[in-house]
Length: 340
Image (cartoon, rainbow, N blue to C red; front, side, top):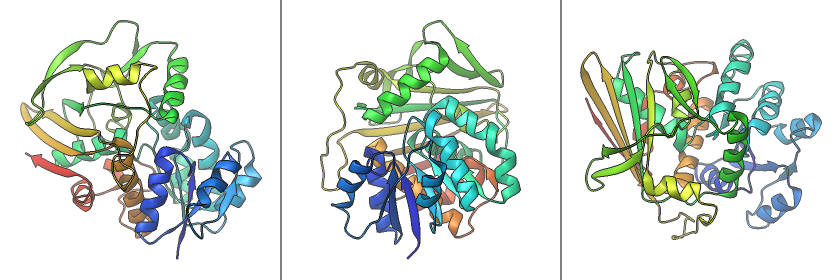
């Protein structure tokens, strides 16, 4: 049985990834910074090995990845963990996948490791998660064989957003890096702005319908999509209710509502791509943004290990995978519609 290291295995998303790997026939190796939390997780996961490793301990990271065929990094903030774990993956000669939603961390990964990963003949996939990966797949699938567009819009219809502790910490790191400014992708580049984001109405498909959203509520899609598609404008939007949840320090963490540990949160991701006056659309519906990240990341690992990739080096989901086929493979977790 092939072993896949999960860095940050004891975190909220990490636990979903561990469960999904086991369901897919892999043996997860539990690793991360907190030895006690790893041991506590191992007590509930029969037969799994624990390998603690701090990000500033290269030797421990090498031991953590020894004998594994891939690593999934679930430990934020990725501004601190991505580079050390990627370095360890390159030394081990194995592919790296992470679930980073941090815009600047994903920019760093693409800039720092594009050449080295390509030269090593390995694959590094950042943002292989609900934010960044799913939107990139939907946009790429909506465009078909086309590799350019005039505008890309990704609207997130979340009925709520109860953030994990990791989401809170990662958000704080991003805000510090931006010095409190917001960011958007316009004119073919990232722009940092001091003005307030606009509020507008987005026409989600039924049963969600028209909803108030925060415009330019930028997520990792503004990095993943233009990393491989020629598009000068990429905008993401968030329902007002979810934006209020994530902004409030009093919003609780997710709570399990079924036997799989998923919350009762639902989502609808609505993608609109404009190209030469023609609109292309794609939508995805599902439950629990953290839980659905696990099949996205594990499907990515499985495709890399079985040679179903289109690129080496650092590559986001839409570039490295066959987007429509990837989305079809997630039919147990997502309902996807493509309307060309």
